[in-house]
Image (cartoon, rainbow, N blue to C red):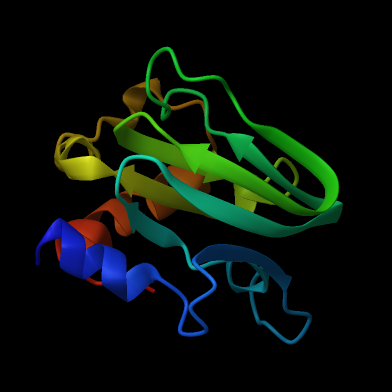
Amino acid sequence: MTLAALSATAVTAAGEGHVVHQHSDAMASTAAEMFQFEPRILVLEQGETVAFLNSVGSHTVLSQNGLWPEGVAKVDIRGRARAELSFDTPGLYGITCARHGRYGMVMLIAVGPEGLKAAAALDLDEVDASARAKDAYRSLADMLLAGRLD
């Protein structure tokens, strides 16, 4: 699947652009299912903007140490109902929730062809995350490379 096709798949149907929600599902049977970013994968063209919703209460949007393009300012969004970020530098961005990342509440954002290349070469040894979070990143990278976005 091409970058343009993947990007089109990731845009919300409402035409609102790229929007990431943070959910807590009290009916879920496991913590990994309970806490989720939605979508968990985005593919962007360089310079596109993403709106992160619901970084309130115990949900946050944080740069994942070891899974963030070199030289790009880290992200720490807390206590905001909506925050917009522009992704101007190509590469692969790992995002986690400070409290729920240990349960696998993570997401990947691939920017430009470089993001897809980085996903293909992903080395989680340098990622400062729990084993469950690393498993989630690996699964998301595999889905991204297979063109399966959720």
